[in-house]
View 1 (spheres, rainbow, N blue to C red):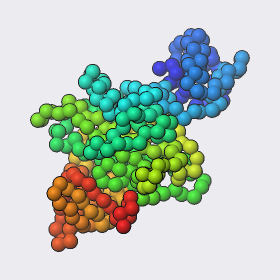
View 2: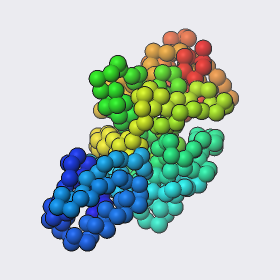
View 3: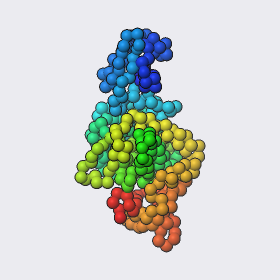
View 4: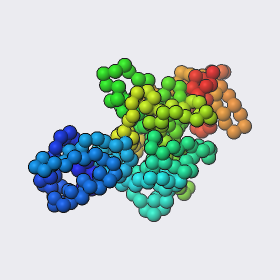
Length: 335
């Protein structure tokens, strides 16, 4: 806790903060402050300490740690209980393990790299170390199980807004960058290329949700992708410089908490529909819907209050697509 508060104080000051001021602010001894500074240095922070002046944060490393994320959070619940790993099989697996052990609603699990990351339908998810955000959020929602799928869309909206805010900050005073959009139901796209994917899993009974785990991987600072991923992109490629992943994680939690509170009141997306559709790259585009046993095309009109994709078919009828693969013309090479 002292590490988080010390980080926040030094970052906000931008100059030296005396040891005495830190002691008084946190209600701890000078030794405790000194130990907190030493631990931060071990984690890669460049902290200058000068007699009679105090401590100054000289440089911020791009690290994903409990202290760094915690020092940036502005939420009440989301991410306040945070567990970070240098390496994990997958953050979803670890979040489900913590859920079974009784971890609270809003627990956030992050990793620098994943050895067994997965996307939808069991597809492998590339997880190189130190360049992306790999995180899973544990929820214990008091909603009906049939409404849980909407949480994927809420996370998508939150993550897209967070990416756009971070890109806007990075591009301050420079030509505008493309806006991060949403490809229903679980992808984020930039300039027609995939920047993030979401995988939601849950443990339920017929009429009760034990927990939901929403995992998301976001390409933040990746500079190049393997040949088998020709339609992938990272935020850095559009920002023109490295970005701080912990800053993005904290923004995601902030937006998610805001949207989750609104969803929880009505258990639908009626209040979020306009904001979601503003970023929906499917909207107004020709889409190809692949469902078990059939394939059809039409024009995406938007989403319903239950999160279904509304598609106008060639005969003029409107179909509600609840699940399935949806390809969008002009995105990921669908031409």
